[in-house]
Length: 99
Figure 1: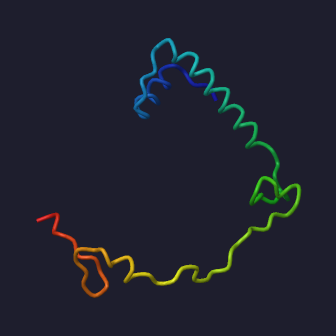
Figure 2: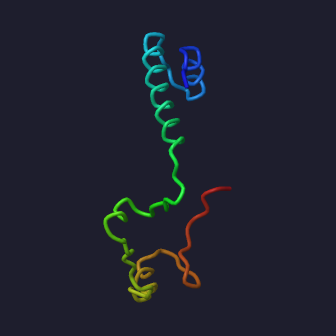
Figure 3: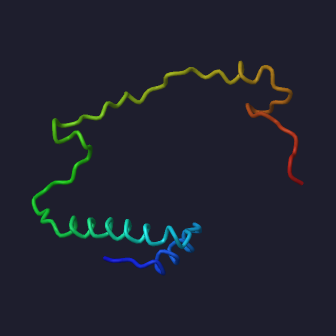
């Protein structure tokens, strides 16, 4: 796919980027090369190829290390609220900010 400087200018406007006229030619060539490469990739036959969940899964299966779901800290509400200026029913009371 070939892009021209006019299309680059329009893309720059949509992306809210200022691309000078001097840069538009180079940018058009670079983006055209990238789009051509993506076109080559999309033409490759990938039937029978499983998608990878992790890039290192090719070398060996990757097992996720998950920790057990359990309580790791005790309830310290009273200790945390001991220095609070105002507490009611286990909640911090704060002054009204928005009227």
